[in-house]
Length: 539
View 1 (cartoon, rainbow, N blue to C red):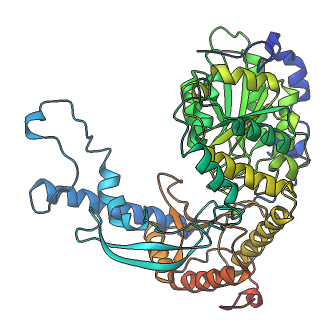
View 2 (tube, rainbow, N blue to C red):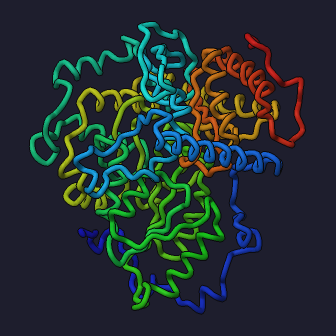
View 3 (cartoon, rainbow, N blue to C red):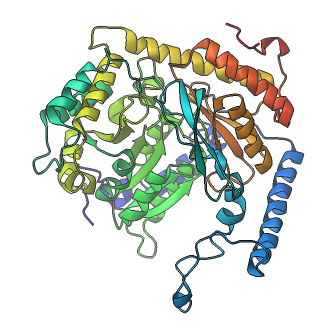
């Protein structure tokens, strides 16, 4: 497994240069930090707990559905119900099965019953509104058939189109069309061979300037930016300390690296410092040698919780214990900060204090792919050691131009104030929508500045009913349940956009208020302000 040179992510030896006695004497910096709350905190992350009966009813609901699942499996086994699930062929009965029956139980008996709420095909631009293809099922969601009709003008509350750059405005997309005509749709080569275009290098310099760091490198796929670069930075003998709610791409990259992985409680500085202290004092298991590297992995905005990382405190701990910091800004870059530069700008910290800055172009920039940014030595090392750089095809020229167009607009290089207007509009929409939902009595997670707004639904039956009721009102939402979330924390995830008008948001809030009353989803015990509930069509 390749690892970085001495100039790169390699902490000083001798257990990171810290004495165990000094650590035990110092401990946590203050009493607030012992409780997982640092003194420099500006975060407004909220995680309100529901009444006890909600948790009881949620477990009861899953229990009933599971019992019916076993009963239906019995009916299938005796031939009283048709089995639609994939099965082994008769001549392969003696083979080791490809399809594990128990592993498919949840999919077969729970997911299939509510499958119509996911994978809905759209047939238009995913802007503030879109068109859905109408589909029906004659076998309880095992298969679907299209009717040939569409459901027009469904309000889009699920796309990551934070700044509204996923658009089809001819004037805005002229440069993208020019690049498509000049270079074609794909490069058909890696950048190390003959796929390195001058616009790729131009975008990399633009990203570095935007973030305020020395250098950057772009990749054609956001998921692979994490999963294929982390193994190049750490390996055997290294320690990764990861937030428990990190994205799957970070988890996969950590597992592929071969490094030891330890997990700290979400955004809990006391839990993080405890792991750091143990790592420095005890070293590696059995041998107790110092770790070659200690890498802290966090996200800027957590996509399922809407919470914002406590960056200043993590940077302080990173410096105290001579560790390194990997920051995933997939959802925060472009979406937070006065000028859209992510959580480093939101907290007013020096970007150079973050060793590895990662982000994607699939959300705020309306494109595809991702980047790694930081010191020039780091980026130069990844160009020759990252699997994603060596083996993956280069980014499409049209996508490259789209990202540059959006980034120049945000930075004001295009000579307009459109970018800053969108950033301010997104911030205004976010605070307005969150405040109204809280006033209605919904339990929502996350930070006041986060455009990701999870609304807690809890019970499996209400998750399904909520998605169907909202679609009946021509509002497209994303609902998420177990195993993507804890079993008692199923939710609907709203994603705000600068392209949402106040009229659109008020229409969504009006129907949310109706559906919340209809399905009894207002679990919050906070004081409500009835005067703040919007009326349909209000401005």
